[in-house]
Length: 185
Image 1 (cartoon, rainbow, N blue to C red):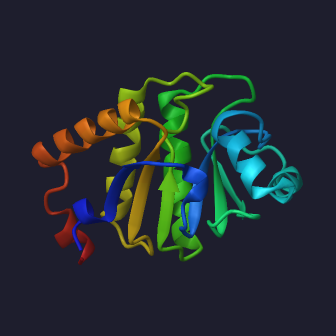
Image 2 (image 1 turned 45 degrees about the horizontal axis):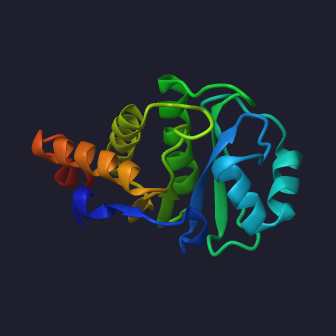
Image 3 (image 1 turned 120 degrees about the vertical axis):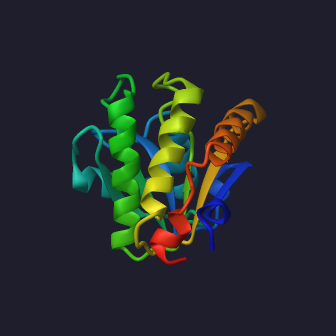
């Protein structure tokens, strides 16, 4: 299976995804407040916040995993792209995306779904988010991994269109070339 076939872009509700893990756009204190985190807490139940509290603070650019609570997803990977009340940076987004992918692979997960991390409350630009996250996923999929499908689940049509445009540019510019051969897929 080629890398292009492993990445799916869609507009829908992240909290409804039936995958091994969904990714939470988290703060480093793992407080499930507003935005994606709030939706995960409301739909998944307070057990997810309790698990986050037990983990405590993690570094910005890091990630942590909890159960999915009442969600269809079996796990939530909390990608800490900002401090509580802070802004997302490109470095933090790269780190938290890569760390989320590593955790998923270490746990042997096959499917993962990401939102556009950092573009809501944290105010990160959608175009740059798409470029960074898609690049990190492609680089991860070039190496041996348990992941078979990576979904980008976008909240609205404008976000989906930005991710689709960036993804098309990456494929057109040959940024996926030889990746399938390297990974033995």
